[in-house]
Amino acid sequence: MIVYSLACTQGHGFEGWFRDSAAYELQAKDGKLVCPVCNSRHVHKAPMAPAVAGTKDQPSPSAGDLKQMHQYLTGLRKFIETHAENVGRDFPEEARKIHYGEVEERPIYGEASLSEARELIDEGIAVAPLPPDVGEAN
Image (cartoon, rainbow, N blue to C red):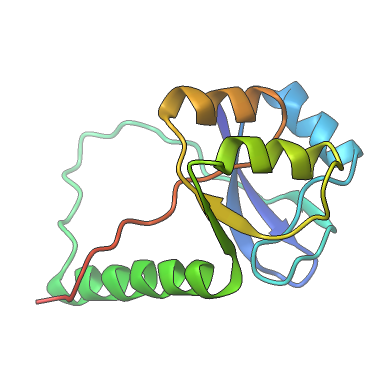
């Protein structure tokens, strides 16, 4: 698996997970990359900083940082639940139907095992885990 930082022409940044660089290139060429914020299909790789192991200790996130991350995850989950259809355990089958043009394209979410998610990614179907329902922040 490879993770790329992606961005649309509107400046929205997001991550894309791909089986390999060829899978990214194929999806980009076929216009299958879509910004999750504005639905733009004008998506490109964004500059990435390499992950380099260092000897310096990284500071722990502050309570304010943790609260902000919690709010973001809660908001993202609510947005998905509000704007997408919950197809439950039918998620892998519905994602394939959408990908292969058997049904009209629409935003969906649901349940898939890790092996089912990997199979979808191997087929070039973009999937991502839904943020957990983290409850109320302390």
